[in-house]
Image (cartoon, rainbow, N blue to C red):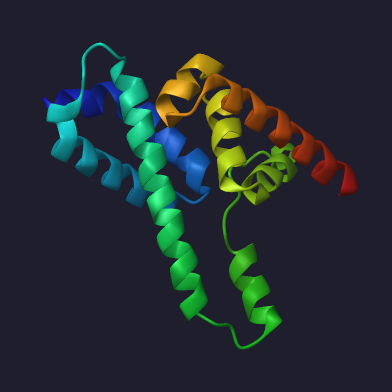
Length: 161
């Protein structure tokens, strides 16, 4: 059964992983972690909701967990110089290969997690406010507020650059 789900949803899930992570290496880890959790919790899926919404929620939660772990790990790692840090940051591939979108992706990645998540899922994955509310388990009004705040932050950030 899992093989069929991977065939049916794997490509879109991997696209979401790339959008969230910005790196194919991190996206691979997120993709695998998501399917592992799906396998472990498949008995908790309720057929009353679309499977893709459930899968997306698991993926976003895995991504949040990975980001939390990264934040803690980054506290333990120190660079000798600022140049070393700049080299490491510049080696991270952009979210999208198109040069004209690189600024936008960079701005989205700099947003606080709660805003970048709704932006990616709404504008780049096509989920509407109601679907995001169910996926993220937050009220629709909160989704709308976060989208509004994210747009304002992006306008300011892109205008400054």
